Length: 276
Ligand code: HH2
Image (cartoon, rainbow, N blue to C red):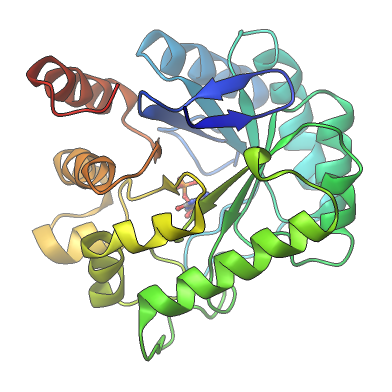
């Protein structure tokens, strides 16, 4: 049985898990946003829609976005985290700053989700100092400011897989057990449309690491390229990509549209297409 150890929960991955995205950024109106009260209401809403876990983020990492300061990120995330921890589900924090990781783990966060795969100075130490928190290691080429400027790979699957294996080994060497770690190919992070589609077509190759996959296709620009739809009209495309990714072996899908994704998964489950 595949399990994901997090601070408070041992998550059974026999059934695919839906991770609901909560953005705590002043410009985010539809998926959390504006202020702590709205973001907490959004957490409750996503759980009511059937999310299994929540991912809270105080910094946008969309292509071309600007970083926020440490103080600002803490001010956004901490009040929402405190409330979310009372909702009875695993709470992940999407951050690449070791100081934020330390603070949210001290308050009881279940998972550190780092688009930078704990490469910042001190990030591995923060996670290794915690006895049981979960970790999501994501692949990114470059940084959010520049990553979409002509990304190049000889073989995107091999390169993403080798990177994730290296980061998994780095955690192991610090004494972090494998069962705390999930891996993420980082759809849209320094990848062309064709790279992203390849990562889905050949996603099973990444299972060779032995760790579960968390994948985020929700509303991403590759879906815009395929459908011709702008970001506010990518729900159907996002659900299709989430299902395809689960079919290709993903254990956790990171999504904005929880209700639609959960419905689609229920149908697959009823038909018997899903594991578990
Ligand atoms: N994508 C985004 C942010 N965090 N974390 C993981 N593990 N995997 C992802 O694919 C991933 C992620 C994209 O972030 P952003 O552009 O800020 O938008 P949103 O948070 O609304 O998805």
